[in-house]
Image (cartoon, rainbow, N blue to C red; front, side):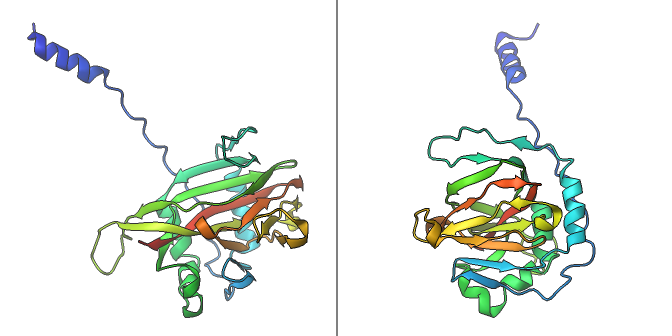
Amino acid sequence: MAPKGKRAAAAAKKSTPTQPLAPPPPSWPVFRPHLPVADLELETVARSAIVVARNFWPKSLCRNYVSFLKELPLTTTPGKPKRGEAVRVNDRFQINDFAFALRLWAETGLEELVNREEYLPLWGGEVVGLNPNIRVYRYSQGQFFDCHYDDYNLVTLPKSPDSSSGDKTPVSCKTTWTLLLYLTSAAEGCIGGETVFYPNDCQLESEAIAVSLETGMLLLHKHGEDCMLHEGREVTGGEKWVLRSDLCIKR
């Protein structure tokens, strides 16, 4: 028989709860055709606060991704929000996936676009990648996201495996701009769902800056302290599909 002390230690070790393993990331489809398919430019919607890049993804790739995303285990958000949160009714999937964030950053033309000299003053620092917290949103008929602000997050990005410097030290970052990639629009039967900004922190229709959905369009808007009050208007027909991440600057 084992000594009493050893038996107690063994029992304690046996009863220690194990942390559940994180689910593996999805097998995201490849980017076909090779991206970008068009010369990318950032168009200003609101000076130093909202920009868009049209035709960031071709419609064929958006269709492929929507078909793929429909098979993911989406979760419907609760209708009653936590204290201080806006009402949001949609279906979502969320995964921490650095590899996919790196693909979105490095294989789509986004890295080159964001780092053009004329756009550098926008971001609040040196942009080094995307937030690996990847979110998928589906808004069906009757679903919406009420007025809210997007806060910043502190994240740590591992160095890219093909980093030429040889330095593998993780990079401490702060998110500064929200990234939304629209995968559907009226062309696919989605009615409504505009992203609407209110520049003076008050929901006045006379001041509303409405960004209509365009399939394959990228919307970037500043968040944190400088975030505009904004909402995702109700979808009244079809489905609105969105991929979400954030620009990360080095701290």
